[in-house]
Amino acid sequence: MRLKLNDLSQPENIDFAKLTLEIQQWGRELGFQQIGISDIDLQTAEQRLQSWLGKNFHGAMEYMSRHGNKRTQPELLIPGTIRVISARMDYLPNETDDPRDILDHEQRAYISRYALGRDYHKVVRKRLASLAERISDRVGNYGYRVFVDSAPVLEKPIAEKAGLGWIGKHTNLINRSAGSWFFLGEIFTDLDLPVDIPESSHCGTCRSCIDVCPTQAIIGPYKLDARRCISYLTIELKESIPLEFRKAIGNRIYGCDDCQLFCPWNKFAKHSDEADFMPRHKLDTADLVDLFAWDEDTWLKNTAGSAIRRIGFERWLRNIAVALGNAKSSDAVINSLRARLPRSSELLREHIQWALQQHNAVQ
Image 1: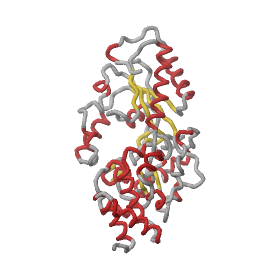
Image 2: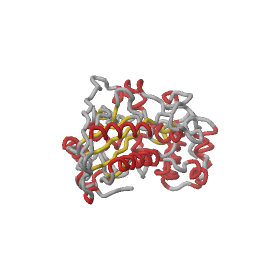
Image 3: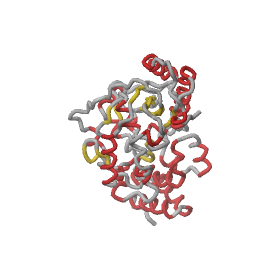
Image 4: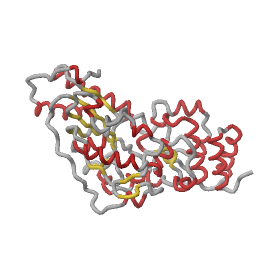
C-alpha cells in the first residue's frame, strides 16, 4: 500500500525513539542487516550530481538528468517527506569458487554477483513494503512510499547520511563491518523519526579500486566516468561497445565487480542466506560457448525473474561475443561464433566479426 504523504496528518502520541528501535527490530526479522534513518538535506549530493552530469559522465543514461531536482530533494518527489528509512540487505552468494578466479577466465563467463539470483528489486521491495505495513499497524495511517532503485532517488548519499556506510572512492557504499556487497532500499515517510549519525569515509590512502578497474573508469577518488565502466557498457549501453574497451572487458558479460572484489573492506563481507540471491542455472560457473548457444526461448526461460532480463537477448549475445573474442582460441569458440553469424542482427554481427578477428578466423 502506498499512501500520499501530503494527504495525511501526523499520527499523535507516538514515542518516536521507541518506534525507531521497533523498526530496526522488524527490519532484522524481515531479513535486512541494517536500518538507518536520515533527514532529507542532500545539498552536497546535489552539487556533486550536477557537476557529474555537467561533465557528461552519465553517457546515455539520460534518465539521470530527468525530473529536475526531484532526485536530490525528496520532498519534491513525494511532498510531505521529512525522513527516509534506509535498509541494507546483503546479497553475496556463498560460492565454491572464488569469483576473482573467474575474472578473465579462458572459457568461463563472469556475471556480476548481484545478478546471479532473483531480481533484487522484487525481493527488497516486498520486504520494505512489509516493514512499512508493520509501522502502519503500530501507528495507524501515516504517509510513506517504498523505493528500490525504481525512481529518482539518491540512495547512496541517503544511506550514507543514515549511517549505513560511506561512499567509497569507487562510488559504491561501504560498511565497516559488511563491506559493499549489499542492496539498498528506502521508505520515504512523514514520520518525525530521530536521525542516525552519518558515516565518515574510511578509505584513507587506499586506491585499490582505482588501480584494478579494467577500463580506468574511476578517473580519480570518488569520480566515476560511467561511459568507461564495464557495468555501463554491458548493461546500460544499447549501441556498439566502443573498440577501445572490448579487450579490457575480458569475460565480463553482465556488469563488473572488480572494484568490490579487490576492496580491502570486503574481507568483512558476509555471505547471504537469502535463497533468492543464490545462483540460478549455474550462471556462476557457466561456459561462454554454452551461453552463446542459447536460443531466445532458452534465454527467456533461464532469465525469468532475473535482473539480466533488462538488457534483452540481443545485448546478451553482444556481450558474450566480445567475451568470446577475448577467450582462449579453440575450435569450439570459433565454431560457436561462426554458427550464429548468419542469423545475427547488424549490431550482433559487428561484435561477432570483431571476435573472429581476435582469433584470426575471419572468412
